[in-house]
Structure formats: structure tokens, C-alpha cells
Image (cartoon, rainbow, N blue to C red; front, top):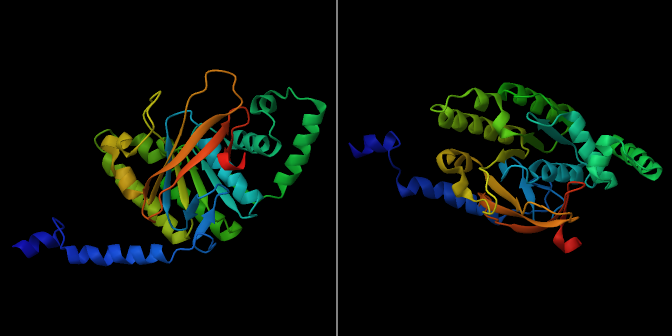
Length: 289
């Protein structure tokens, strides 16, 4: 009887788990973070995305997840000259994304770019930077409430036709399967959906970075416990990053932020200190300032 129960997945013998754990330890031991066949460098110190991983980038609302993701995308495309993909299925469309990228390149405040309230020298600078961005291999899809099947097709085309090496998905809450799910069905929908995205990352051999909101809180630094009833999310993901900073209520030009690892199956936990510049949306390593 005990063997029958084990076969139904009620429990496992330690022997069957050891093979998986030792294999992962050996793979991590041999890992070379500078090996471009294994990892994508983000342009931030100690932050590398492993190919084939599903990565969650989570924070409280309005902290800067999209800006950080686009900072990383911008770094990879402009500094490493590698092709990157961005699928925005929520609030931001292709125009918003492009404005942000122009803001990063020019370091001109985003509100000035949006309103076109610019000085002559700023117009010239934007024109110059747009010429530089013209040459970058950045590919954007702004289908709202995207289904996984549509994502899968777009991602496959980006990789096969444009050699894209990383794809960002913004925002998880607006994926069609999540939007349409009943409250009772949501945990099961999330489990199946995340497994599909995880398999896509493996099949395409790229990191897929999914942006996700956590419950609102004015002070608490986010952690795994914020997922609560949705623990299937961090359990399924290969890596979970938490972005945190204070909410600015004055006219400061920058504030401190942190990007920390909540989970990492690759065995490398990081805690990166960053500066955030609210006018431009730029994030920079504190050590480089």
C-alpha cells in the first residue's frame, strides 16, 4: 500500500529528491556569470539573469518596476548590443515605452518629453539620442490583456527572427487568463499559466522576466510572505526579485532603492543598493555614483 501511495505523489523517498538537488548543486558550481551562453548581464552589478529561467520582478505599486525593467533592457540593447523584447499588456503602450527610453538616453525629465516643454538644446539632444536608439535591437509588443498563446507566438518570432535574448512581460495582473479567472479558480489558473511561461523560457533558452504588483504598504519592505494565498507564484518561478524604495513626498532629485533576491534556484542571493531618479526614471548602482 505504501508504494501505491508514493506512486500517486503523496510523498517521495529522499533518494528520488537527491538526484535533482545534487544535479542543481553541480550545475551552480560550474556556473560562470560572465558566460554569455548561460547568463544575460543586466548592466547592474551582481545582477545576472540565467537563460531558461522564469524571473519575477515584484514590488508595491508605483515603485518603479517598469522603469527598472526598461533600464535593464536599455543597458542590454545599448551597451551589449544584444536584442531584447518587451511585451506590455497593461497600462503602458509602445509610445510610453519609447518616451521612457528617450528619457534614459537623454536624462531629460519625462514630464518635459511628454509635454514637449523643451529648450532648444534639449530638442537637439533628444534628436541625437533618438538617432542612437534607432540602431538598437529593441522590439516591443503592446497587446493589452495578452493570452499565453499570443505571447508564445510573439516570443517565438522575436527569438527566431530577431535573435532576442531576453523578454520582459509587463504586467502580470493584466494577462488575459488572470483577468478572466474566477476567484476560486485563480490559484489553479496561475499554476498552469506560470508553468507555461516557465516552459517557454526553457524552450526558447532565454530569461523571461515577469513584472508583478504586490499589496500596497507604505513602509514594509516586500518579501515572499506578500504572496500569501498565491504562493504558487514564487514556488513556480526560478528567481524572485523584490524592488523597494521609499515613496518620495518632496523635491529630492534621487532616493535610495534596493533590489533583493527572495528566491533563487541558481543559488546566488543578491542585495543591490541603487539610486532612483524620479524625474527620468533612471536607476543607477550606488557604487558607480
